Length: 381
Image 1: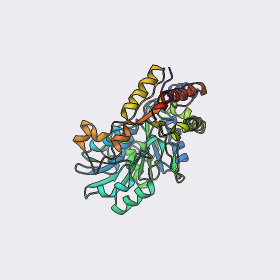
Image 2 (image 1 turned 180 degrees about the horizontal axis):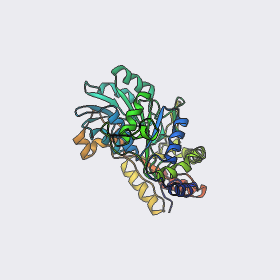
Image 3 (image 1 turned 90 degrees about the vertical axis):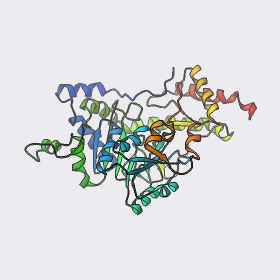
Image 4 (image 1 turned 180 degrees about the vertical axis):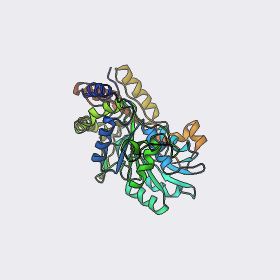
C-alpha cells in the first residue's frame, strides 16, 4: 500500500519528548514550545509567534483579538476546511463565501469588494496548497474599507508571496501542524501577530484569560483573571515532536519540493495532451509542496480514478466539499454572487501521495498508475 500521507518523522522526536518528560515540564509553554516560537519568529520575521493546540484555535484566537461579535460578516472562500468558518461563526458572525479562481483554487480577489457590506469585519484569505492568494489586492481592499485580514495559512508555512512569508502579510496569520502538514506535532498550530500592541492580549487569551505569561517572565508578582480567554497551549511534548522537524525544516522542504517537481515533470505530457490539468504557481509565489493535485475531466472521471488507484494499492483522495453546500454552511453562511468555479473545480480535483520521505520507487508506481489510467482512455480523445 502506498499511503496518501505519512506524518513526518526525522529521528529525534522521541529523544526530545523524553527530555521534556525528564525535565518534569510536559504542560504548555515549556522549553520546546519556546524554541518553536523563537524559530517561527526568526524564520517568518514576525513580531510574535504563539504555538497553539491547533490551527483552528489559532484562528479562534484571531477572531477574539479582532473582537468578532454577533451580526458581523467575514468574507472567505467556500473551498476551505470547516475551521476557517467555525472560528468566526462561533462568535456569532456570518460567513460570506465568494467564488474561487480556477488556476490556484484560492479566493478570487476581484470578487471580494462587491461582497463587502457595512457589517463586514474581516477578510480571510486561504492559501490553498501553500500557494499564496493575491495578497496585494486583498490588503489594498482591506485598507480601503478598514477591515482586518486573517490569513488562513494552515498549509502555507515556508511559502512566500513576493518574498514575504505567508501568514505575515495580514493582521494575523494561522499555521497548522496537524499530522497531514509539512511539519507536524500531531495536533497543533501557531498564531502569528504583526502588531506589537496586540501581543499582550493574545497571551492573555491563550492563557485562559489570565496574565500568567507576565508572571512567568517575572513582570508581576502574581497572576489573575483579567479577560475572557481559553486554554490554547499545546503540551510541551507535542512541541518537542515538532522541534525535531523545525531543526531540519529546509531539508524537509527540499525533499517535498523534489517530489512535487518530479510529479509535474513526468505528468506534463498528459497535461499537454489535455487529459489532466496540473497546479499553477503564479510568478510572485514560491510554494512549499504541501500537496500535488491533478484535475480530471469531471466528477465521474475522478471517481473512476480514485477507484482505479485503490485497486492498485495507492491512496488518492479528493479534498473539501465546498462549505456553502454543507448544512452548516447554509445555516451560518451565504454565498455571494455566482458559484462559477467553486463546486465544479472541487469535483475535479484529486490529490496524489506526497510526504517527506516518499521513495522514488513508490512515486514511480504512482506516476505509472496515472499514465496507465489515462493510457486506457487515449483512444477516446
